[in-house]
Image (cartoon, rainbow, N blue to C red; front, side, top):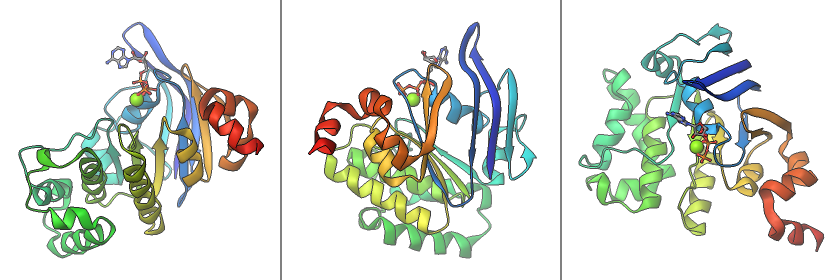
Length: 243
Ligand SMILES: Nc1ncnc2c1ncn2[C@@H]1O[C@H](COP(=O)(O)OP(=O)(O)OP(=O)(O)O)[C@@H](O)[C@H]1O
Ligand SMILES: [Mg+2]
């Protein structure tokens, strides 16, 4: 579905992505893990058309999208949930969701169907649909950010750190809803600092280190890789698996 070849991205003179290649098949959840500053957000922004790469190739369903503007990429079926849940605080929950569907605002029936779907996956959002989005809790705002991206009816959803700053209970809720969206047919690329969680819900993963993919494999393999455990899963995880 998505294929990236030898992607190079810089901010001025600073090279951030140094030849990244990866692919995502239809129906997959793919995890991208890596330390702060590795270039994960840069990769997500580049796929979304917000940054122009120096070189490389990005193909979505066989089509070269590297020069496409962000709105055209959304129209093709790729939606980004950016880091830091950028919802429209003064608008209500419902208005935020409707804005997510603005590129297909004439499709009243489809929008209604998708709202029903969203409200069944996120009952909290239904309860609070007339509440001002800025007054939602952090976890509810993250749910809204994911739901708003879903309203564009994407086929590929890019999630940049959905668990950032969330309590463990809310994190579970978000992860469950991501799995549910995947069951609805959505293909997902998820960037996560919480590598354990990301590898639990994904089928495959990539490890990005200072702009290069240094490891890739099935999520089960990665969970057992000594380097991944040391660098990303931490000592606690090692102790759990030794027991
Ligand atoms: N607009 C920018 N101008 C210059 N440098 C930038 C810009 N945005 C990001 N960078 C730099 O690019 C590198 C990669 O940043 P990026 O945000 O992609 O990392 P990340 O892997 O998403 O990190 P985190 O886990 O902290 O979100 C960092 O060193 C960062 O300082
Ligand atoms: Mg980031």
